[in-house]
Image (tube, rainbow, N blue to C red; front, side, top):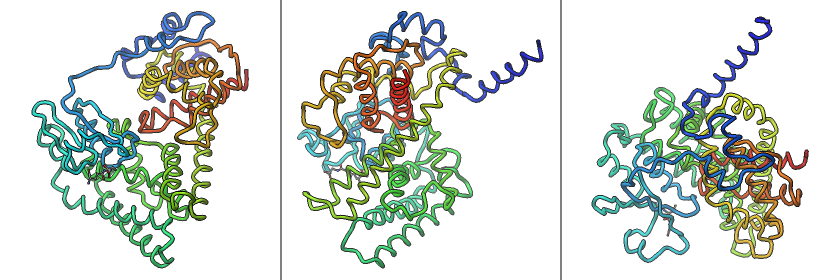
Amino acid sequence: MFLQGFPKMFLQLLYLLYIPSVLRPASALALSSPILATAAAAPVNAVPTWTELSEALPIPSAPTPELVLYRDNNGWCPFCERVWIALEEKGIPYTTELINLRDKPEWYKNMVPTTLVPAVKFKNDDKVVWESMEVIKELDERYPERKLIDEQHESDMKIVDNVVSSAVKYSFSSRNATLTESQKQELENAFEDSLIALDVRLAPEGPFFGGAEPSAADFAMIPMMERNRWQLPVTSPTFPRLDGSEWPALAKWFRSFDQLDSYSRPSGDELSWLTVSSVFLKMFGGNGTSVNPSVAAKIVMAEKAAEEAVEEVRAKAAKGWKRERIMRFFGAKTREEGIEAARKIIDNHEAVVNDACSSTSEAKSQVALARLSPDSKTSVDLALRTATARLLNVKSDRPRYEDKEAARQGMEFIARRVCAPRDMGANAAVEFRRCLLKEAGEIVKN
Ligand SMILES: N[C@@H](CCC(=O)N[C@@H](CS)C(=O)NCC(=O)O)C(=O)O
């Protein structure tokens, strides 16, 4: 008997070690036990309502904001991302105001002389600071407990500026029809040289410029490198991957950022940057009415790569049942990324469903994605609640759909629409897509 029981206990212990969040205190989520979760959030034979899902969310801590961060509404600005990560790293409470760069409000243009984002405004003295690195400097002066600018900052920034500027020149060269092949090769060599110098600098201390903890130089470089990490394989497919074996210290740097709490919300993920890549190529890759043929080929590649990324998530979703069951078995706390995604969807569910079911109005972006008819709203809403319950580890019955195919298509559509960091952080977006595609798969099976 004992011998039979022992391997199971051993496996349970292994699972515990495998899921670090199990070991964290479960207090953040009221519905931490599976029994409670079933009783409080999901009436028998029902999918939780939005109100019930919202009650399953932990109450967010709301410290008094000390400044306002002004950043672009699309989440595309790399300079904004620098400041955003710095604020998260220093743990400074802030609110965000989004600025539409295509139609900047007059008050913003009057407040910031350059009219560029990012900028911050401190609440205690109304001081406004702009220019990303100036903002980080000011943050260090006002909040010196976790300094981001260290003694090596100046020399590290030379390496960063070199990498960032040669990356920009190289990635633009692939769609600049006026450059000769040898000019393009020179730009490629310059970028490669900058990466070699970077790898040498990161290797001895690492994983960051700042050693074990990231510094301002790391935050200055990650936004551009994050975009290049996901977009270069499509726009310059022959170039070695930035997170691959060619630059081992850089690969480790990326992996360390992937684990960094302060980076979780401001970062974008592979699928989002691939989608943005084709949007950008369409916007800037031609004369306004048509794109040139080499750019058109890259758009096809970006879209194909994005679909491949969707399929990867689908494969993970198919396997994900194990972890969910194990988490429920142990009454484990819902992971942070699930909570982040669920909070966003619960707050915006109507807009998300309306966007998916908007075939009767003209699409403003991602026009190639087919929208459903407004008649499908009930089914899409039900599927979205089911996916959100899964995000929160709240038990739900199998839904009874009016229109199964509409529900499935709705989940597929939303998985392609969610964009990090515009809507949520990279980890949250990955987890949200996994739950959406999981539900799409369940609809086909049941
Ligand atoms: N050197 C500035 C650059 C900021 C910048 O170029 N921001 C862009 C967005 S990525 C912007 O505000 N563009 C609006 C415009 O050009 O009007 C910094 O580091 O903050």
